[in-house]
Length: 245
Ligand code: MN
Image (cartoon, rainbow, N blue to C red):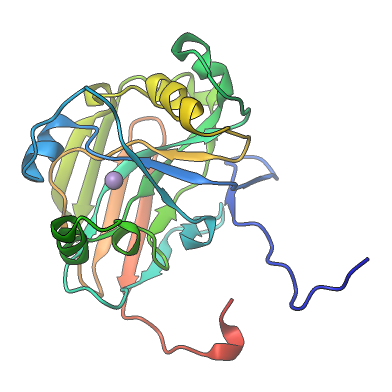
């Protein structure tokens, strides 16, 4: 067998609640503007003509492990406006392509609470230039995600309150039932664009109330029946080349 130039990276994983198992992540798909009130606060008219998607890389996930009370993320460079977006994360346990919406539920393994952290100022710049959003969305520590709750325990999540507070002050609140594109419709649409597989995560959009955080802030996100996710933002630590990777 050929030798590796450097050691292969272990898979990025989420922890499954109450089980001694890990959920290895394959790809991460995010939907844009999936709650009308959030689309409006972004200055666009909500529409149902066609959903649009973007991606994050598995290595930008900061996973909550079952023994942790909180996860800690670094404040990223190249922004003065890092914003929070609380989202339902759907973890797929079964892949496929051309999945019918009415068949999509059987592809879901479970759910978690996640944050789609966004360098909003950079995103605005990229939008203005009609350049890809990647550097506004897909950067180190941009996806803190809680433990996975298997659907066999939660049932299918079609509704339920979601909130996000910063330092105890509520910023975002909404309900899963307010999604413009349902989870099943998202799975169906995505499966017409790419071949989905076990391990894929879907970040399903955020309700209104997004806003900035600064180092030292404590974020608390809740979604009904999934408990809460506690995230602390810290000043970016010093870069050490020998620890990178
Ligand atoms: Mn988002």
